[in-house]
Amino acid sequence: MKDRSILVRDLLLLLAFAGWAMALPHYGSEFVVSMALTCLMYVALSSSWGLFCGSTRYLSLATSAFFGVGAYTSAIFLGELSWGWAILLGAGVSAALAVVMGLAVLHLRGTYFAVLTFGMTELIMHAVTFCEKRFSGTVGRLLTVVPEPDTIYLTVLLLAVLAVGVSIGVRRSRFGLALMGIGADEQRAQTLGVNTRLIKTAGFALTAAFAGAVGAAMAVRWTYIDPHTVFNPFIGFQTVLIALIGGAATLWGPLIAAIVFSVLAETLRLEFPQIYMMSLGLLLILCVLYLPGGLASLRWGTFGGWWQSSRQWVRALWSGESKNV
Image (tube, rainbow, N blue to C red; front, side, top):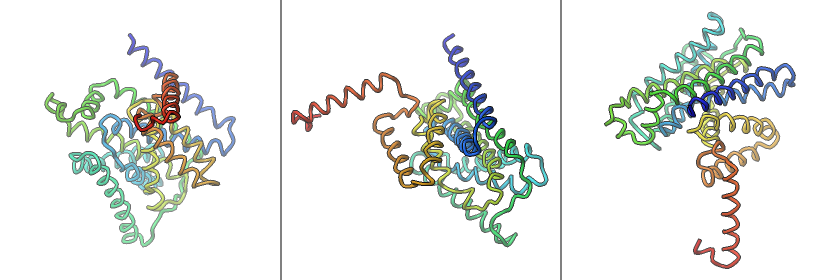
């Protein structure tokens, strides 16, 4: 009964979030809608990233690769396919790439996996650049068929809601339990009969599908794209930071952090880019040191614990006993 009540609560919260975001373009300014679109993009990216990486504790830096592949797929086929099929094709191509990449690198863990996924992202970006120069003679693509801004906004909103909704469903399924088992102890999960190679590849492909779909939808926002724009490592790094600071293993943490960082990005990055990056790094350091569960783990008792710890530290420092603390 308790699990059922939590499910109902999560679905109601998701419905409320979707309703608020859907109504925003009707009363918000163009700047607010643009900020909300960025926010929804990172909600979808960080929630889907946390679905796999938060459960398995695999640190993937390949989000930019899947985002860029989806964007280029949309740019190439949007003139021949409808909007919906272009989004689905971007998701499918990215998922297929993730299967190939996962079969090659998912036997690694930790720093090796993170560095290799980042290296493969750079490899894909330079491969796309080479192919464009070799076969078309130019680098970059101009998108002449662009849907209405409302269509783009609603599509990204749908992807964000789907990412959170799929996370709700997966966390309550055997597939989700297998992912968490891999994160807790992969060898033990394997001895218990879990096909860890298949589960990891499927989870990695699911994350990539969302990243590719978001890239396909967001490509038309720029109208002109090139490899350095859509394969930008900053997109992948910020997705990871949002998920980690919000709480990668939680459901609502990435969504909360995506809203916070979207506001910070739009208010600070343009006028004070150094302060924005400093704020990003400071939040990450504070979360690692004092809030390892992310922003989603904040409770009233957490503030009380911090207050007691700070008082003890000041008292020890004042009495000259800080060396013993």
